[in-house]
Image (cartoon, rainbow, N blue to C red):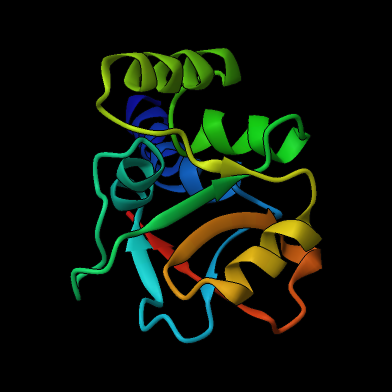
Length: 140
């Protein structure tokens, strides 16, 4: 009985991140050579801890504040509530250590911005993928 429980718990841990993001696609500009990122890299990008792509260009993260997608993303990827995320960035702005990501209200606005900015990264509903941006594969 005990080994079965251990295996079940391990399986849950392995699949938690991808299952939690079910329906959400992390996306970049089609010209961006990045096709995969680790969960930690995505977290560090949206928390302002990773600020440049491997080629040295500045990463431009964008969010969708005020949407269910934003709540799901902050919870499952950033391990924060929306409130904690907002406070995190207000503190960074106040102390001069960072500027919060630009925020949009819809998948279309996020896709449009990323399509126009080679160094941007954001997230949209997988059903909104229309070929104007590239989906990033997330790895553990």
